[in-house]
Image 1 (cartoon, one colour):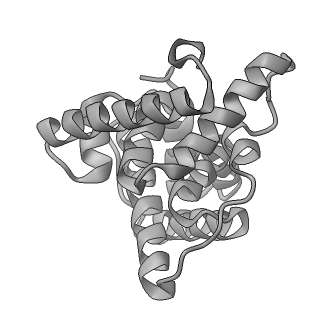
Image 2 (cartoon, rainbow, N blue to C red):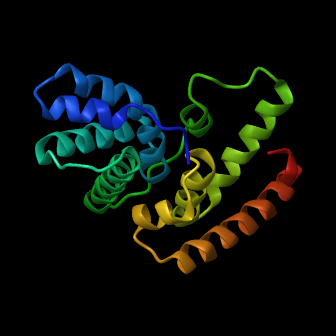
Length: 185
């Protein structure tokens, strides 16, 4: 799991009336949530809208959380549900354009080889079924445990392990076709 952050502290300050604390919470989580939403909607602007809607839901529900991980998992669930709602409403395939920039964000590696491998990785991830992309993203980009992935994607542990195994096998095959060593990414 990622290091503990101040998310729960900011959220609790917001619940106590400090409206500026919600801005801190948004700053803390929005980039990761936008990247996660992008895995579904395949459009940066829509992913940002989905994430904003998720924060609005959090603000309106004012749910209490026992720890930061519960808050994070809840936010990912909301983003997932909002993204799926968007897809159900629009029922169209949205072309991918800038997955590398969205997933890597502002901190892209300077190393040319690493960037080439990243581009290949993201091209290959684009070709995966969305459920594979989702579990890979949560596991490897967000460093979620299998238990936490289960909560977000609403699947059993066995189903998540099976999805991860299939996703990794499919990704490995695609990377080999791209000429990238699976161990290099």
